[in-house]
Amino acid sequence: MPSWLQITFRNVDASPAVEAKIRERARELERFYDRIMSCRVVIEAPDRRRHGDLFHIRVDLKIPGKEIVVKRDPPQHHAHEDIYVAVRDCFDAARRQLEDHVRRRRGDVKAHEVPAHGRVASLMAERDYGFIDASDGTEVYFHRNAVANGGFEKLVVGDEVRFSFHPAEGEKGPQASNVVAIGKHHLPPRAMS
Image (cartoon, rainbow, N blue to C red):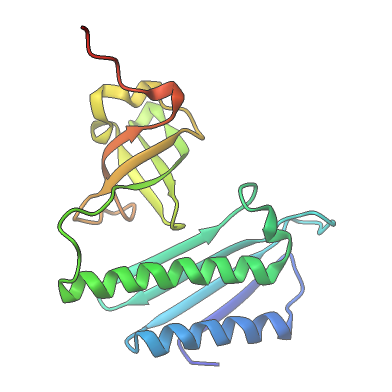
């Protein structure tokens, strides 16, 4: 196992086969980007494992100047009853983020990227902020002022949103700007004719 790789099992027995799959996926990341400083992988199951319970997976990848955090949590991913599917999905998302980082560093990013999207994961209305579970697995912080048209009060956990990544990362991790609720309940008002 590479010295920079740490694997932790919580509420589930350690599995040599799962560890081997994680090592394989970590080596793939290293072959793509050889400057990985550390990779922590946490596999967690509910306190008492029952058939049908889903695995929580988190990959925390540290590279020079950046930390990439990807997590896969139920209930959105029912395929994650299979630990190998959960590991695959989490490492695929980590690879996409790593590829995006490398492209940005090389200056290969298109000038007009499509806004990111995800769902509101939590809201701390009394403290004027919340978190978005982005479609790539990133947890993204947003402040009331980042929500377009003063729509912070209208947001509820589970709402689908589009947003832009703020260029600077804050103390709570990646930040969103230009957060816009999307979906049938959040259509923009029609222009008067």
